[in-house]
Image (cartoon, rainbow over all chains, first blue to last red; front, top):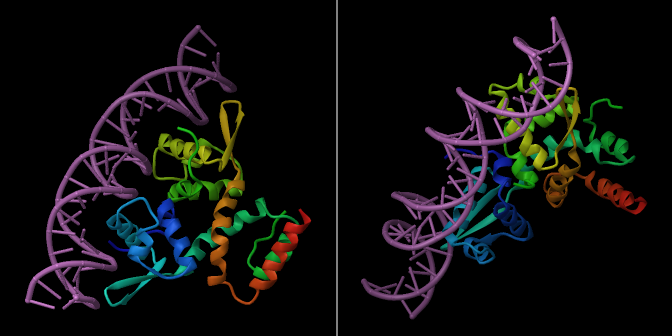
Length: 107
Length: 107
DNA sequence: GAAATGAGTAGGAAATTTCCTACCTATTAG
DNA sequence: CTAATAGGTAGGAAATTTCCTACTCATTTC
């Protein structure tokens, strides 16, 4: 119960695939479950983890429950990643950092 | 046991903290272990996971083993994250995408 | 009303993770 | 050579994850 860490939620490939599907469009559980080689209850549990991490929201529509991607919290990942960018970015990095206006003095 | 998935490696807060320490500067195991409320063998095991994920490299220096951050593979995370950026980015997004496109052309 | 559909929960087995203490090897210091 | 230091490995306990089947409840259809 309670909220799950976003990194933990993303550690599972099924959950990443669920988010990728929902990025395309909001979908009910059965439609999502059809795409995986596991039972619907198992998919349901993965969706619960995503819900607990705040990465999806639901909308009740008759007897269907439509899942929507809610990726604001993915920003936590992006923010954690940001200081590492300089390790793989090229020479346009400096301009980008000025745009972001949030990089420490380096190099 | 071969290579670990990068998302899995990052799922643990101790391992993320280890990377953050190594981002500051390369360090031997004991210096890293001193920063955590767990035994050195446990830290050693976390370092092994990071090694298996290709996120750190080691350099033998006398009886010390210096760990270096090797964050190229973090790009897998950044790449997975990229399609979600539009959900939280503002109007600078278009310029940034333009920069990315230019970068791709130059390389 | 009864049957079917959509989806969550319960309980549990198997696998994996995380941490420990104890031990081992390699290198350096005295 | 002996002792100390640096750090990995072995084995195991406890917790967590991942998947299952069986069941429940709510809504819709007939």
